[in-house]
Amino acid sequence: MSRNLPLVVGISGASGVIYGIRLLEILRDLDIPAHLVMSRSAEVTLAHETDLKVADVRALAAKTYAQADIGAAISSGSFRTRGMIVAPCSVRSMSEIAAGTTTGLLTRAADVVLKERRRLVLMVRETPLHTGHLRTMTALSEMGAIIAPPVPAFYARPESLGEMVDHTLGRILDLFEIEAGCVRRWRGDAE
Image (cartoon, rainbow, N blue to C red):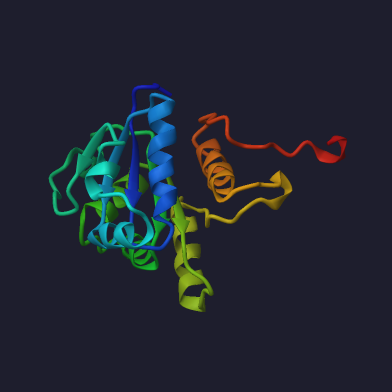
């Protein structure tokens, strides 16, 4: 896969905006262009969970798009990408993607990734889940999406929240065959 192809990063309004921010930092450090779209709810969550401004987050991406820009490059299948990660992914965004009733660029871009049979990873951030959520996740999995809730790997013995976030994102990037260098890999009993 061409190293120049961008990876689309969506940040929705679910709690856990740090996943999207840190993902952008990792991609920047790896020289992989990130094309960012944030929902309006993500901007609100950003203010609640961090001291960063929206402009700070946008500055981490190679290209940014407004949520209302339905004519953006990432809204078309002819614009080639590596795929998309929604980090975090709200249940609302997940549901829109599953139903194909996209109301903004974030869910439209995800819909395009699915229709083009590219990799779509949704870091769904909700708990507990009811049967409707689970059915929606199943439908998305059947369409080709990967549902990857940000669940910490304690075997890695993280010493900080940052290490937990990095390990999780490293495993997400593994799905795109991108080595981020932040995964403590399981080696069995030898360790």
